Length: 385
Ligand SMILES: Cc1cc2nc3c(=O)[nH]c(=O)nc-3n(C[C@H](O)[C@H](O)[C@H](O)COP(=O)(O)OP(=O)(O)OC[C@H]3O[C@@H](n4cnc5c(N)ncnc54)[C@H](O)[C@@H]3O)c2cc1C
Image (cartoon, rainbow, N blue to C red; front, side, top):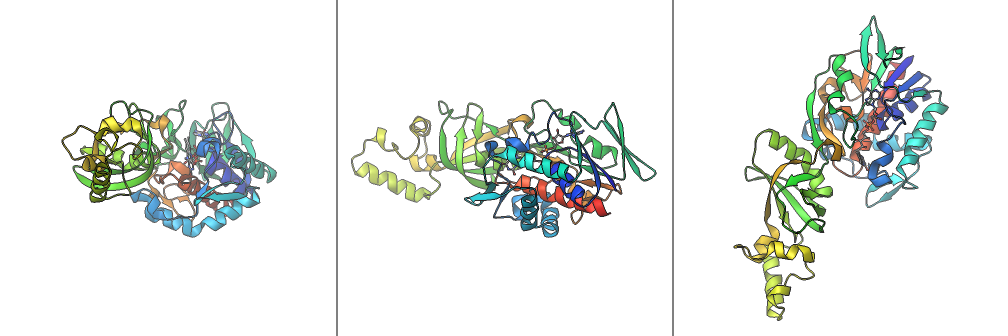
């Protein structure tokens, strides 16, 4: 069985190692200078490759059924069992799974070497520019060469986090096989919002609630970074995909920033009252409760101090863009792929895996888990189909 894999990222390398281990003749065509360039940058170079708390609820709403079925066909234990056969041992920190050395480039190198050991051939600087199917065979053109294959696995990812890649090309190969496309927009991305004067650079443990036309949509809590254009940090990134969906619907999107998430408003008022009663002067009542740079931004308003600390309302204007994002929402609709095999329901003999599909997860290893599971499944299935 001759299998051609377009894209040598997290999903493509897993597919290559899995298909080659099943005895298929595998060729990987990778557009970049090296395989796994993005994978090697994940988790700030540490590679957060999974999470002990796996649930389809951590993926975008339209993909949850697909994600649940995929992880039924390829459970997390099987994914990590496969990674171990590739030489990847793990450690878990607060539920987040990392390679034991906490070096993402080692994950890339181990996957690449496992694929090559099983006979896969990898070509870099080899962008697939055209793809067609004639009389049961696939033909992939790079400009200088045309490759023929019995099966094709599309694992070309998206332009999230890439400065040198044109987002218009994302999913173009799948489109040429007849797939449709849900338009891409950044998810896991900093947000452009109203800014609190003089607070750029502040990091604070806080809760963010996303509101659309005044209605609460979702919340997340953790370390928030205030920037000169808006909000960053994991909570802001986790809300960004849905914020993008709501903005595209033309809604009035706001974030409620809560600087004292472990207190109710009444508890916060009572704490501030106790501090005042203890003789702490007004200008020092917030000292040590919130970062000093934030204090001028929350005082001197009409609201009570406790109310203001828990209800800073910021308008959301958009995201910081695809190059600043960790993943893009959108892509090939999950319904066009069979989650039990990753086979295309549109073009027989084609398989799709990884971020090219419209299934994005929260921060915490969910996107790599999705890419690995889909890649392994696609590789195994394509080798025997
Ligand atoms: C900075 C950053 C940090 C991240 N950290 C994490 C993390 O810690 N945990 C986590 O779960 N997720 C993380 N992610 C998300 C995760 O990296 C992606 O979801 C995952 O890499 C997607 O895998 P993929 O194989 O589908 O796509 P990619 O890894 O993007 O691989 C696709 C490959 O296909 C190649 N390609 C594209 N078009 C063509 C073509 N026409 N022909 C040939 N090759 C082509 C590309 O060059 C690329 O190498 C992070 C993302 C970024 C940007």
